Amino acid sequence: MPYTPDKPPLAENSEQLRARIPGWGADLDPADRPAYPRERFDPGASGAHWELPEQQPEKWPRERSIEHLRLTPVFGTSTPPRGLSGAMRKLAYRRWSEGRAAHWLVLLAADRVDTVESTLRSFATTRPDNPVTQTGILSERRHHGVASRVGQNRADVRHQLLDPVIVGAPWVAGGVAAYRLGKRLVRRR
Amino acid sequence: MKAMVYRGPYRVRVEEKDRPVVEHPNDAIVRVTRAAICGSDLHLYHGMMPDTRVGMTFGHEFIGVVDEVGPSVRNLSVGDRVMVPFNVYCGSCFFCARGLYSNCHNVNPNATAVGGIYGYSHTCGGYDGGQSQYVRVPFADVGPSLIPDWMDDEDAVLLTDALSTGYFGAQLADIVEGDVVVVLGAGPVGLYAARSAWLMGAGRVVVVDHLDYRLEKARTFAHAETINFVEHDDVVVHLKKLTDGLGADRVIECVGAEADGNFLQHVTSAKLKLQGGSPVALNWAIDAVRKGGTVSVMGAYGPMFSAVKFGDALNKGLTLRMNQCPVKRQWPRLFEHIRNGYLKPNDIVTHRIPLEHVAEGYHIFSAKLDGCIKPLILVDAA
Figure 1 (cartoon, chains in turn blue, cyan):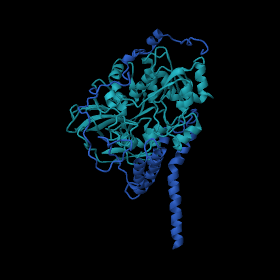
Figure 2 (tube, chains in turn blue, green):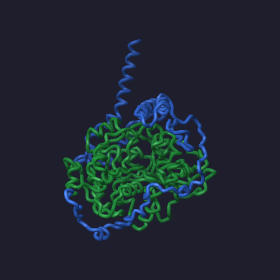
Figure 3 (cartoon, chains in turn purple, green):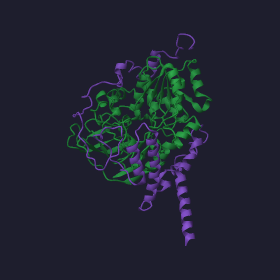
Figure 4 (cartoon, helix red, strand yellow):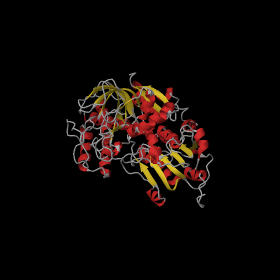
């Protein structure tokens, strides 16, 4: 009871727990815990044989946080920015620090634009995006989609209905836009 | 080479991509043999992490064989079997020199708040990940370790993040002998955190989730008591009753950005992306821990703001501890625990999926089909 000094008793004492659970108390002493203390100054521990790493060549103007004083010595080179989404990303990095909501909101918006741009771009390739195979939805049948949900008392089932809306909305919106555009062009003729 | 590629929220596929090349003298190129899908990969998959670009390859849990090394690499040779921590880190910056490998300042130009992580958006440095036949591994003399001969490949891949993170979470909880420890979330990290809490001397471990099959695993794998929060009108009140009104001494939050249990919070964050993450589990942790207690946060959140009950954390005098796990620091001790039989990491693996079927793998994990707890990807079968 929190109203009196003593802690509520446990169902099992340490000896009983040690007998029941393999390894119980092996790290009882904080000195045996690798995360303790949190900071240990030991520059030689990592295996690094440099004080400042050599600079990786910059093959395009690498977007970076304005909180950095320089381009980091090493960086990822996956998926360089391109198109409208790339311009939005470059703006987000150039204009706002990590402390500003605008920085993250523009990056999130760029992600959505990137999805639309990439999907449209895929239609000009031999392998257009395919929402059926890419969502893995066919695994529902082979992996007991109904039995995994019905009667399982799961908290997430209610909002899983939103997932297809999120995936499908851009396709529906794109279809509607294409239909309206087509209709307008036909009328002009 | 074949690689998993992100195509937009809830959509991935396998594509032919160029094999990565050495871009820095201390790079290695690793031929991946096993990878895993992490619960945090689902945040990317669901479009929650800012600057997740179409075309990126995910995967920060992987092992493989060294295929090529850069001219300054001393510690690895072609043909070595290696396990690679999810952290990309230089080993020499202000933070790495103090053991904070997950907070490296030399590898992520996109953000100063977070270090580098393989295959985890440009917010974490823009590195392609290991759900692929080949992957570029920067700072090969610092991050990767040789896989010991006695170690199972599946255990090795689980050590690259999930097990190390769970063990780290138990350590950050500052457990002392006889503590009552509540673990929120019975996913891989939560299961490992619960199991690790006993190593630290916990007197009682309680795991909370809403998926019965995972709670069953918490009982058998982690020897924990379990609570399905769906069965309780207010799980915080139930946890208080379990502890005679005191609250838990330590709470380890292993849920993160897509926490369920509050429809509004979940939808505004996970679906509408208006918060950096759903703070449901974090708020339960703050409410369920006793005054003066410790909350250890292992759940992953985005960089945006979340509606966290900070006032109660202050009023209760809580210690909030958190970080991305500096993985390699955990390994020597975890190797001992595995060899001693105290931890059996691959007991939680439920699915082994060939790389070609990665889209189905993501859906099965995301939708929690077929009792999925931890899916591995068989890359060398591709």
